[in-house]
Image 1 (cartoon, rainbow, N blue to C red):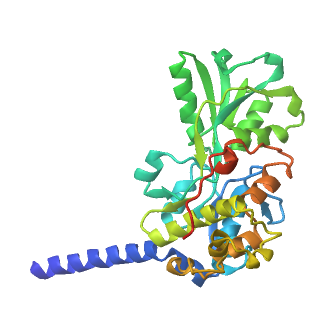
Image 2 (image 1 turned 90 degrees about the horizontal axis):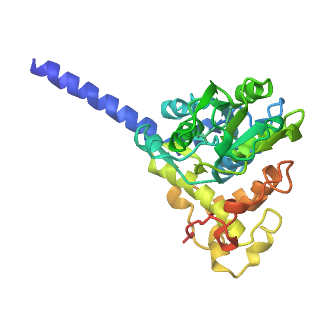
Image 3 (image 1 turned 90 degrees about the vertical axis):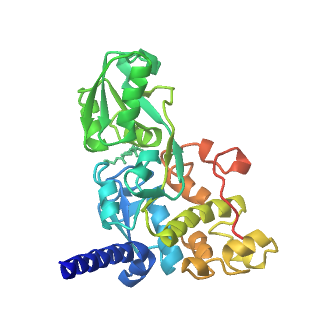
Length: 339
Ligand SMILES: N[C@@H](CCC(=O)N[C@@H](CS)C(=O)NCC(=O)O)C(=O)O
């Protein structure tokens, strides 16, 4: 009896240790594997879009490339794994991906009930609605009685229910597993309205045959802080993902770009010197070398460069910086100091 109990206890201990080891060493696993696995969305211009030849582009894609640049000095050492909204958290929990960068909104239950941690925000968004122009709608408050195409397993779906309930309005939800299916259904006339995070909605509208036949209603009905997510249980990896985001934001605030980063070797600004590893060694305690942030900026860019080429003036979307400007320029991006 006693022997059985001891064996059982030993078995449980082995399982617990194995689970802890699997969780604790994400960086070591990535280094050993030789590349990072990054959960991305199925395809949304501006955030993560495959070109059909295995090359991906977008803000979330560049975030994972920045991680690879920090870890390997090679922004190409990432494998992108496209995930539906439904599957994204399970993929992270099971270890199928090291990090999720997939237009995912930071909410309380996603952290506390799913065993996850958001490492920050890389895009502040909010939910909007697009309607067929011939319906002559001018406000979301006129949407009572309409049919609305929406993606399942998203905050979008939940906000929609809240908003209509709070305003005593009715609607017919028509829900789909993917954003593309929801947009196609909207285009085919199955719904009067399509709703999504604003940036995803602009990207969806841009891809339509006749974007001008659709209007985006003015109201923004929710807060969608989108950011990279990791599993709980590996503080070192959590810190790396968090500080890669902060490093890109700090680089923009300090005026360090992929073009001028080498000239900054002679900069006398101590904040720039610390960021780029010319002074101190802030990478070591994270398992990275002193030039981790230098390589992010050199190989991928600062936050502003990444925003501009994927979503801003250098992209077809031409989204304004707005909330996504650094705090010193009136936005919400505020990264703690590297020191
Ligand atoms: N931010 C919301 C929505 C995330 C989401 O799924 N967004 C759409 C684009 S706005 C997407 O990535 N879709 C990928 C796809 O299934 O095609 C959430 O975290 O629940």
